Image: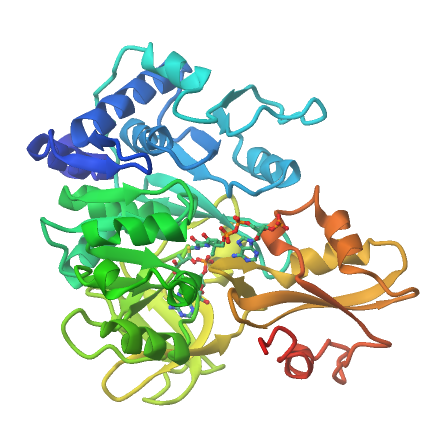
Length: 502
Ligand code: MCA
Ligand code: AMP
């Protein structure tokens, strides 16, 4: 095979689009200004020049925790171009959480949104990308543009995204150029992306949803997006008449429905409202339809697999279902013995296809455990297919809380809270929450009652604040089964109405 045929660098495909759309508006910004495709890719080439000046080689890691801005996107694209591995970190991650990623990936370059405190030593010099106007951006722009695209092959990794573990350490999911490209191409077809589409992009760009699903759909189709710095309802509603697609987590739709300004005038030109990352309740789906006459299109995915299923663009979108497997993606439901279940039987969802990741970074054992002998990835989600082949998710085998589309792994928080003075034992559960879908709650056995403030203060330096409990419940003891395991289902039942609105 000659070199060019072997090359799967996803950046090639994105760059081909630029060549046909140089003057087209790519990023529409909060202040009304914009970046054309030409501007975005010129900036990317300056970042490539900067990376080169740092002696970066293919497969080196670049760890990035910075606010959403066009330059942050250019940095991601430059990593793809240079064949380096992009490792995004949640903007609310603490120094301790960043340190873990740095130690695990041993990056050549570290880019942060803030100067590290004098007490923080990541063991590597870092660059500070705090805004479009910062000194680092001027420094990058002063580097000569570098436009060569590094050749990559199937096994080469484009990005590592960390997902916390149900037990033990956080794992870096390695996604290849092929994973990114196959998923983006499939989604463009599934969602009927049109030349005139304009996306409302309000998601953060450190997760698969905002970084890959949303951005790749736009860049690979040469269309435009409103590139909002944060999720700001007022901005979204104001720009909605000049957009056609919104991608969001269910909390976005819950919040939109509470806004008076979310009127016919705002949404009448919208072609598609897409939801994912967490279950969309039938109530939200139905209220949205009553208000707008539009059915939200729900899809399902995972960091390790990108997108797996989607409700149809043209056919019926069913409330409570995540739709059909995407083209080229095999989805099966298996029982505890690993046998494939028949229609309507609940089992674990397993996935195989070009979208499925290459394994966990430096964890070959863990990777093996998560795949079956015939190479299906075990999602840890429980569900069934009906006789039409639609997939329904009914729960999770993994102990995980999804709050506003962000994952909180109870084991991580429980281990920390156990270290609090006076705490004998504790259990983290997720219970229904009117805004976040699920709210994190800690049920604690302690010598003296513990306040929510005390728990949050204790966790502040340790983990990102979205992982902090929203309520503390003190109990005499935790319900346990014969094996001594905490019966979280009983706790979830007991406190299911904790956040109920009156
Ligand atoms: C913010 N806070 C939260 C959450 N977000 N608490 C619980 N759950 C959350 N999701 C807390 C902050 O810690 C802070 O607490 C306070 O709320 C205000 O923070 P702020 O950032 O201003 O909140 P917000 O703007 O209201 O954010 C809510 C949000 C955001 C817009 C729903 O969480 C969000 O953008 N979620 C989307 C996440 C996402 O992209 N997920 C995709 C994962 P304090 O005041 O105490 O500091 S990818 C994935 O799941 C797969 C692949 C898939 O299928 O897509
Ligand atoms: P993450 O690790 O952040 O990639 O989260 C992936 C998990 O989010 C999946 O394993 C599911 O449990 C959940 N998820 C994503 N989309 C949906 C959806 N539409 N409905 C229910 N759960 C979802």
